[in-house]
View 1: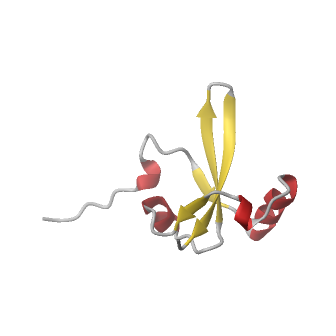
View 2: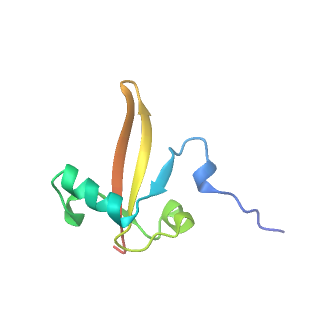
Length: 80
């Protein structure tokens, strides 16, 4: 049986996500007066993190649609 390549990023229930560059990461820390320890984690073994090729310390931006409008959430990649 041939294995299908299915993208978890294109699944209709997953919100759009993107990896922030170092400049954007620094801006987020300054804007929210936090640091790496202050962000929720996403494990690098998570299927989304694997597909985005995240390394420990990378920050992703998640754009969710809420009843009040679009909301941005941030997660930091972690080994554990």
